[in-house]
Length: 205
Image (tube, rainbow, N blue to C red; front, side):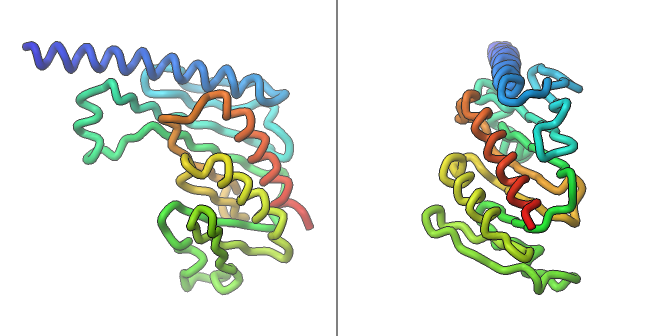
């Protein structure tokens, strides 16, 4: 009974913490653009699903999904190796036009699509970002501006980033995945600004 009570209390405490963090992230997001954050689900103990309307330029759609996972939840921590549930945020952005420059990167992996045998794979060029020991790939006539923004993104948010993908074959074209357990909510404004710069760089001719 004591163990069950402890697990129940830890679950309630984790849900309350997750809800507070979700609200803090939404408040900063709401102040970071001229649009309004329209919450489709949450905020609650599991996170939230929201859209920025109107979306920040140069996007026609900007969606944020936050999956909350508190370390106060003892049962969740114990089951994490099995469920792989972690505190993370996924950002999807649909650009106003097809990108002229593309970039893919995943933590700890060589971009598989760039190394594959599918059509267009030979057009990808591999690069290495030495200061974070990361390999990424670009495609396009002039992806240098996008590579520069990617380096800025890694400089400021590399500790939390898991995936950066800007590809014309995907809808939406941009997907950013990052862990947020130790990310200060105040950093969200800078993150949105950097992603807007990445979108503009992808559209440059």
